Image (cartoon, rainbow, N blue to C red; front, side, top):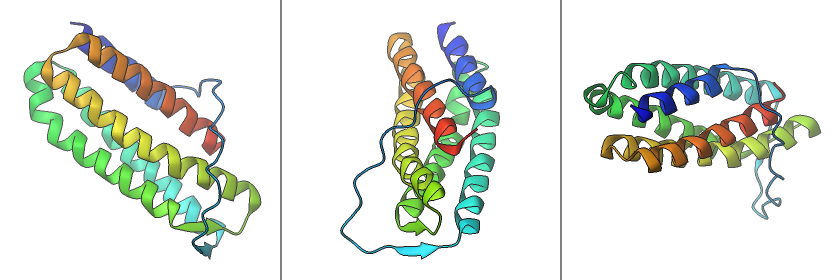
Length: 154
């Protein structure tokens, strides 16, 4: 089954070495004032993101066992993706007092929204049993996860 192979590739992207993909250009600064936080706040958010993605990888591994497993695991996958989206919104709401970390924060805030959206598209395609859509969604998600890793500096 192609879907299982595709999901395995995503798992590899989640836990494997970073691909040589540059992070996207950070969005233009917002005109709205944002609170400035200590670097430790951003570091805590990055650690929390890592924990959520570890859970997502575990849930994806379980869901990749077949169509019935995917149906059972879809709610957990979507919960993890909602948490990723919320982290992106949180990161978008502050600035970091370090120029290097601020550049990373801006890139990650943008990318985490993409991870959440693309992950949900992947779950939809896998649930529908559409191998072509699943493969395309998986490829987009893998590229975005590589960009997240690059933005994190790993």
